Image (cartoon, rainbow, N blue to C red; front, side, top):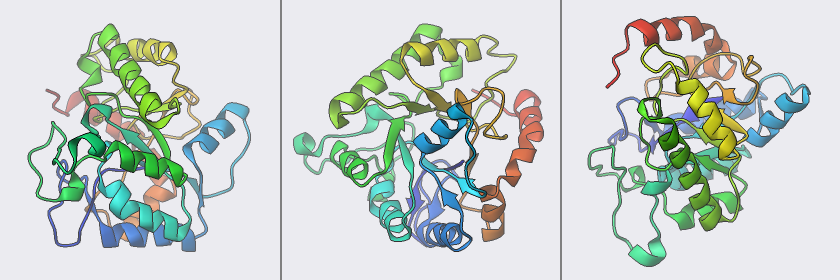
Length: 268
């Protein structure tokens, strides 16, 4: 599975956390590769269903996801996805979305980021999220506050998942079946020995079917659909790097990633 964040304009500010933004011309070329190289771009629900039922998917199957809920998912990614007939799922950090019917054109921003001059680097409105859903793009949770779940108490993790689920259900009329964890951290780590168990319990109590992570590895791993691996597409990726990620070759970097996260990565 591939994960994007912000889609920025060529030559403009990249926005988001450094390296997370992919420029629009690069995104368009990447989607063209998926279509021309005959990838099967599955919906997340199709992928989850296949794993649960033990059925096989076509060769070169990939799923496209977007984290956070940047407005650029609607204004820039959506037209490209529509042009190539590609499915996707967007995970919403629900506390950041605004209601334009109430706030008019009042600018909003993601609270964890500095001010961004790019209007499309701001959060989606609920009306835009509804339009994405109407066009067939799936919607999931990215927690409510976009906090750091590994450092949260078990009850706080559960509140984050429930609050986000309830907000999406109230605003969009459907209960999300999937959540994506904000930030990249391992499910098992010596600093948070209880995290995976707490998260699993919270997922079950909040009635989520699966959780998408930023851990690399085979999608059909031992955890089934509960903890699905993904690989992030970066603004610095060449087309060759993107193609390798789409083919799933980055799953072989799972061990180096775990070593880096366990012994070298600095967490707050």
